[in-house]
Amino acid sequence: MARTELTLIMPGMAGVLSQEINKATIPTYLTKLINKATLYEKPAGLSRTLFNHFNDSPLTGSDLPIGALSSDGQMIIKADPCYLHADRDRLLLFAEGLTITEQESAELVDEIQPLMAKLGELRQVSPTDWQFALKQKPEIQFSAIEEVEGKGVDNFLPVGQDRRQWVSLWNEIQMQLYKADLNQHRIASQQHPINSVWFWGMGTFNPVTKNWVSISGKSPLLSELAAKTQSLVQAESPSSWSSGEHLWLLEKLDIDSDWQATLQTLDKTVFEPLWQSISKAKIDQLIIQVPNFAEYRIAPSSRWRFWR
Image (cartoon, rainbow, N blue to C red; front, side):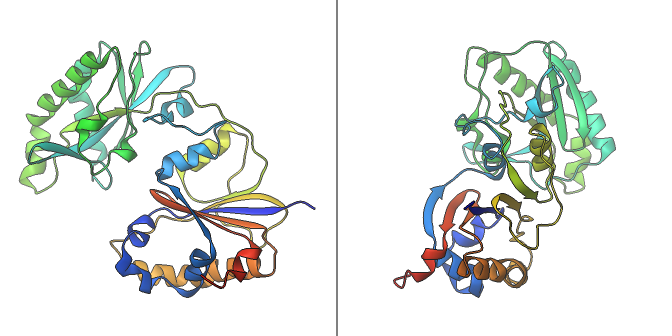
């Protein structure tokens, strides 16, 4: 008899589960699922977690091949705008949540394009998404921006034969952006300056066509990955679970908002039905993945672990 397996991804939940003080506020059915599960350490971020569901083998390098999803035969990497914050003797990188208008983005791209012309062409896909179309592939290893966010950049700088050229370009871009009129205006209006870019997204993506019965979630990356494997993404999850493997990406939990109320709603609409499905053996295995934290695996037999 065919098995039914659901993989549920909960981005943003790491900030809740990693704090002992929050355990008492986690709602009933999510608590039951977590307490009865077998825990596995899975520190990968959301993007790497999604890639690993569609790549032929887990990605273990520091970078993620995001450029390969839209390359059309060209060598494309990301050169995303970011803010470097001086903190004592290190530079912390911040890219999430930066507010950049279409006009500001275009002006910043024009500001630094001459510095980059020797290596390729910088393109604005969206105000916070810049692509760098390269003339040739460099001998370099970058680090994915998601895994650098909020951290000191020193341990994530490029490595490889062409390292000196790329670090030099990165420094030149910072100097150019530092004196840009636009950034002076942003600072005057109490906004973070866009004082750097982060190169990343190089590598090979080897999509594997997995027979997902359903894929649910609202994510541009999820949609791109699914398209590369000829899979369809539904905005809403199925109301019942048929035989086979299902993938469900929840919306990111915003821990700066009323996340407790959000979890209470999810407990009624998601976790209670899943607990009932596990209890009645309608799902043979539930895998809850919390990016940057852990993975929980629950089977119908897990319910009888009286010591948990």
